[in-house]
Image (cartoon, rainbow, N blue to C red; front, side):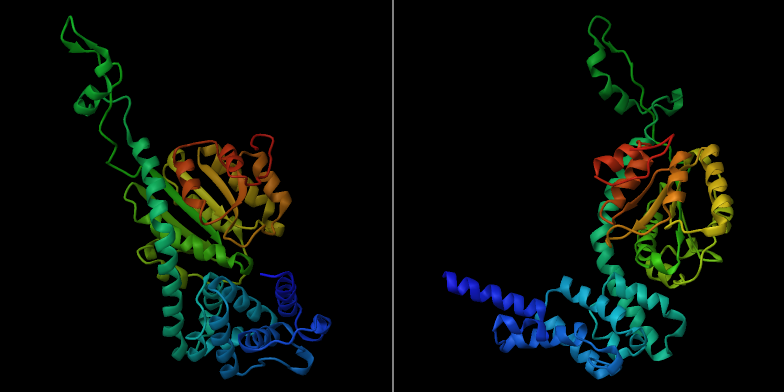
Amino acid sequence: MSESATDQERLRRWRLILGGEAADATGVDLGGDDLAMDEALSQLYDVDKSKNVGMGKSAPKVARWLGDIRKYFPTSVVQMLQKDALERLDLRQMLKQPELLRAVQPDVHLVANLLSLRSVLPSESRETARAVVRSVVDELEKKLAEPMRQAVSGSLDRASRNRRPRHNEIDWNRTIRANLKHYQAEYRTIVPETRIGFGRKRRALREIVLCVDQSGSMATSVVYAGIFGAVLASLPALKTHVVVYDTAVVDLTAELHDPVDVLFGTQLGGGNDTPRALKYCSGLITRPEETIFILISDLYEGAGSEEMLKLLGEFVASGVQAVGLLALNDDGAPSYDHANAQRMADVGIPVFACTPDLFPDLMAAAISRRDLGQWAASKDIAAARGRRYGV
């Protein structure tokens, strides 16, 4: 490409970036697909709300715009534009219309919005909304379920090995193979220095409790937690509970056979009462030393902070392996209560945000009883530093 052609391409891109009157100085005239792309972006970003300029409240216009952006932009950009449209143009009410729902590009943020609108969706939109949620859940399960099963199953296999078996529990085939190096030729026998027993199959090796804050700021984390909860519940060596809460507590464990049912059992957007949720979860914990408790919350608790921290301290003292996740999503650095995160770290509870891609490895590390501070550091995850725990 010649230098003049390169300059022209650079000006063309600046014209698309700047848009409108701010781009007049480029001297570039757009045409064809470039003009259509510019028009689609202008309807979103060059909006005068006071004059109701742009797409307004017209469902046909919005549906046309959704079709345009899907035609001219890649999926990742489409999802970002839709998210911006929901925030900038207040189009949440439009999601109640089935023809508009059928036009959107499904993604996790759209699912969060639909779940928050669930109680006010008209009957003609509910099935369409459920189909949209189902499509996103199925796509995420394809991406996340197998890594979760592989990571967790490997840790469970290691945890199930019985290294101090009674005589009737010895797995002689594996014991002999493990001790061949101790073969005594003179006596024609093997010294069983290492004895390996059959795996402990009589009950779940670990109990998992996911306690999820469903206030509005945690919306996408709730979606991922519901999906992961269903995957964990499918592993027979785990006993998994999923509890969501705002000012009330809802136990969704019975719905874990279907993550869509789990998500439709949530009610996004309320306040939060973490102490109430912790008291409920304490009743689910029957084997503290075999329990992994994960609190997914931004920790904005207000007046309930002292009680929340007291109850979490009691969990740790009883032997529960507790973890605080400030977010479980790909949305970047979360907003959270730094003081509460610090105090949790001070009593030995690791606190950090986690992306969905890393969550399977986090669970594997927790099941293997690895130091989660070191695990977070190895993944370049910033964690709260505490007197008893830190990275």
